[in-house]
Image 1 (cartoon, one colour):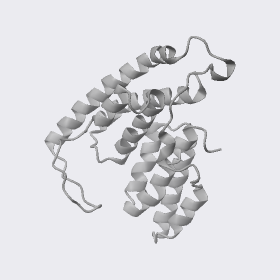
Image 2 (tube, rainbow, N blue to C red):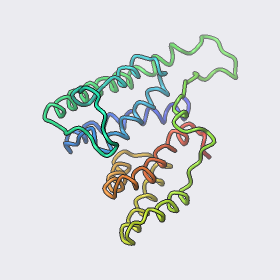
Image 3 (cartoon, helix red, strand yellow):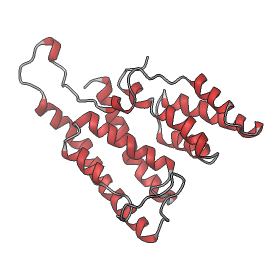
Length: 219
């Protein structure tokens, strides 16, 4: 298997382990660490199996809260989290656990089946469909220095600004390195607690670089 395939399989194993953490910490689907987990898990399933595969489609269809009529809300508001939402959340986490366990176990078999019996040297490796690069255009490139400059413009008090820069650096280092969920979640939660503008202008741009790093588009 290629390095990118190994990376995405490793990410799915991390996603599987993270489910126990979500249950133990009693978080909700509104938590930033869960939102990141959900998006990146979907990206890795898409990269390994393709957008139309049953694993990817089944995971994408999980709601993780009680279905509601779609209502128009301001960007700063969200429906109240209820006991029923928590039940749906846990049930869908269990479904995600079963799906990811099966996907990880079946991937080597499915990859072998997808490989041609005879292949030239140039096409010997299994072709993996990677669509995660659509998250950002390939021409977009976010540097940590840009993020820190943005932070300076948000009008944070000096102590909060210093703390935000520290967490931004930690998040960027982890996003460009091992991409471990517990470490990412810690920095994400800290940045989210500093307000919506910090989360949207600092955390999200760093996270959106991760698919490009995984697929080798950023060097």
